Length: 443
Ligand code: SF4
Ligand code: SF4
Image (cartoon, rainbow, N blue to C red; front, side):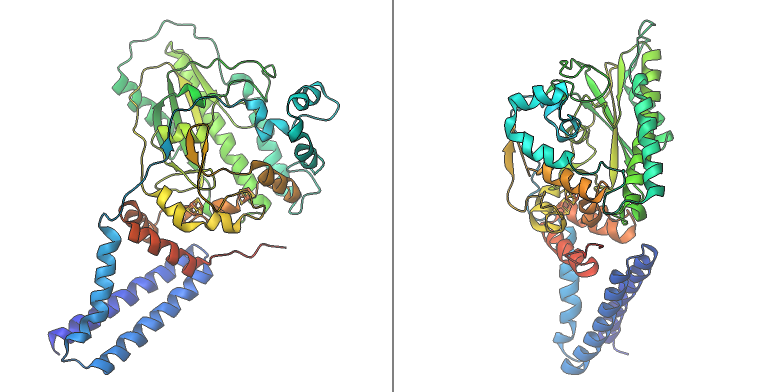
């Protein structure tokens, strides 16, 4: 057989074999649409390759057109192409007051002192907040997807987290031990990774990301927050892929609770160990205990970029992570922020905005929010929807193309998207083709 025909057949077989492998992986990921569409593509490649052979014959230069097109596409997919824009952060001029966050506002009950004081200065928010408060609380009966078993399990986890709030901080009783920043940095990371954190990063704590006043939790409401720690240690915990796939049902909330509880245990332990070494350290845990806005601090710590839907997107695990943090004065080596094409990808993708049932995620351009140019999430719409359905929804996390598990094929796509704007465009098309552009919401 002529060498040209062998090359032609081999290239067709290679493409078909890759698609079959992808179909098998998709079965394992329980993504049956992707499996079926890969099989359709395999048939199309076999028919196309054979048809082209009979159309142009074996003795012609045109025989190589399909393999050359595919090869060129692959090269364009992996070579650096186009610019990667980081998130534009200007001069942040004011800190966020935790009392203004929607999670704090949900807790101001009509007739209470907090309610009267808050809405006397923010009358424009009273109506929208009252509408949210009239709905059943998260994890309580009445929500559309309420289910007692997972709700009970998640409630128990959140209660345990609340019980831990008294242990987030403590006195430093011993003089500071001599600390080599390199050794301490390696030790801190090792401690967290051995406690099953997935990724760890360290940042100089930007004071503008510390809330200005307490809005929730056991500390006095409205008390100024004076966290002046120099460093933030931030870590991610991967949420189980199949649990995230259940969104917007209650299993995703159960998984959220599980990860927050794990983050609380891990960060309280590390903060305690650092204090034992003679350095101040505070854990920041979910529920009502954060002094910081975690996503931007995680970006500073090199754990990822902010996506359109406001979550951190990690290079390896995408949006499918929960965050934990410890702030401290122990001197550490910091990590650098990373840029891997998320801003450009989100410009092209819009999948979370299209699939957000509450319309909370903008499909337009970014806006300047306190000096950071980012997509402005309509948080009241999001929380209103959570209370309608009784879960923390998570559809945006589920549909995000970065949320696929870090397996061979998805990692190849990630590698391309890191460098090439062509890859980012093709990855958006590919994700829509294999997984669908618009989900059908369960009844
Ligand atoms: S959690 Fe649900 S409602 Fe909220 S932004 Fe994401 S998709 Fe929209
Ligand atoms: S779904 Fe698309 S637009 Fe939304 S955050 Fe993920 S990559 Fe960005």
